[in-house]
Image 1 (cartoon, rainbow, N blue to C red):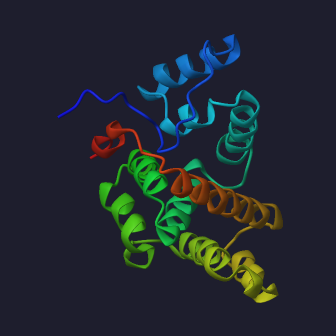
Image 2 (cartoon, one colour):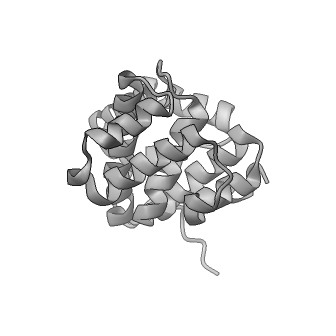
Length: 191
């Protein structure tokens, strides 16, 4: 075994040193609240402008005001990442689903095959839409949006489902292309 330093991704793009004060404070807050600094943040920290753009979009979509719960948004992240086979996001967001739902089996099912999960009609409609958007976005039509409305989603909710799914389709591709590694701590969380 070698004493290879931890790298958040396969690319040799080291973090800016020293980190700007605002970034250092953000990383300290992550450490305090999550017990770690997610490797995705470390990976983006080679360019603070890119890191700030990524975190602004992530925080808006995943933590901002929405008719979707935090759990529902994480469920979308996991299903999209499962379809895209994004190792980083399946591990990281699978842990978030386990923690938010209190149900380790749900987190595992969403990673493996969301159709096998015990979901209510609202969740099923939401994840079916996110899955279709991921695999065949050009085939989305009014009947797909109407199915979401019938499941209880507003037009704003539909936009949020699409935005979260779209964001994770983009980040999955960046994570896969750069060989981004999930933090090892995620594997044991909420089990």
